[in-house]
Image 1 (cartoon, rainbow, N blue to C red):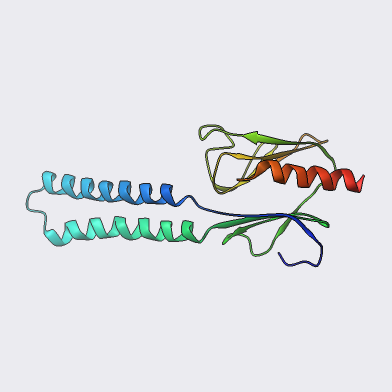
Image 2 (spheres, helix red, strand yellow):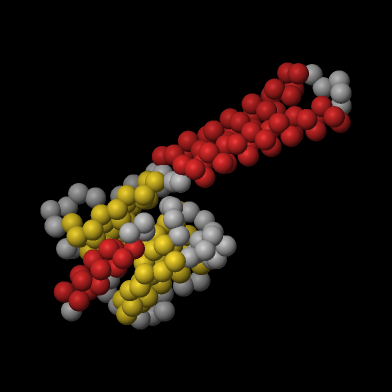
Length: 170
C-alpha cells in the first residue's frame, strides 16, 4: 500500500487471538473425544491408531490456525482513494470505488447476521463485506443499490475520512 499521496486514515486488523485459543482448546477436546469413542467401540484399538487420530486432528487444526495467524487486513484512505488489502489472500491492494456513493454510515453487526458471521471477504446479493475482527464497520451504499461494508475497530474515524474525501471531490 505504498503511495505518494497523503494517508488520511490507516488501520491494520489481525485475527482475534482469543478466538483462536478457544478453537485450539475445542479441537483438542474433539480429538480426545474421537480417541475415546474409538477406544470404547473397540477396546483392542492399538495406541498407535489412537495417537494417529489425535495427532491428525491436531495437525489439521494447527495448520488452519497458522493460516489465520497470518491474516491481516489493511484499510487505507488516501487522497487518491480508498484501498483494502487482506493478507495472505490478496497480493495487492484493491481500490474501493467512491464514485456513486450516496450514503456512508457507521454500523454494527451481530455475529449471527449475514454480515457478522464470517471473516475475510464475502459477497451476498448486493453486499460485499471485508472484515477480520470485531463487529463494527462502515457501510458504503451506492446509487445502483450495491453496498460495501468495511470492518473497522475505528469506524467513526474511517467514516469521517471517507465522507471528507467524497465531499472534497464533489
